[in-house]
Image 1: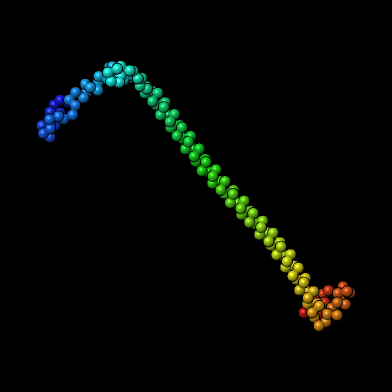
Image 2: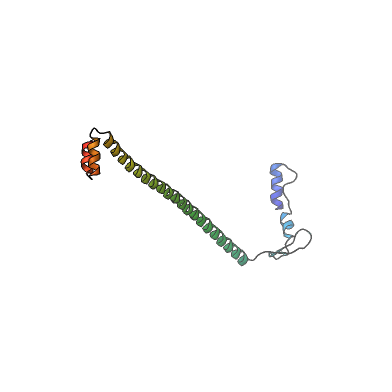
Amino acid sequence: MKKFSALQKQKTGSKVYGDTNYVDNVLRYYDGDTSSVSSGKTKNKYTLPSVSDMAKAKEDAQKTYSELDEKQYQNRVNWINDYITESQNKLDNIDSLIAISQSKQSAYSETSSKLLTVLLLFLSPNSLRIQKRLANGEKKKCLKSAT
């Protein structure tokens, strides 16, 4: 490291280049065992996780991610199903309203037809004869002579 620093000082023309004791400075924080690290001048030991603990943590994280991904997918499917159900209910309600309207229209049409028949009978020049035929139960003849 010292040779590299001297070379770089020469190339750049600077008085200082990097920390010539970098490796030694870093290694003083280790107690020779890479499973514990000391901080600064005090020797507080922190136990680093083992390779198997890290692999287990990674596996757990991937499992959690997969579970969350599946829940998110299921929530989307449920939302779509709810939307479809709500839309179908709205369409069923509209169909019901249309059926009611058609029923009313049919009743109005039938009533209008009956009223038209009555009007034609009474406005016809043969209305007296038609009325007599109606009284005698000859409805078909009445309609024929009214038109």
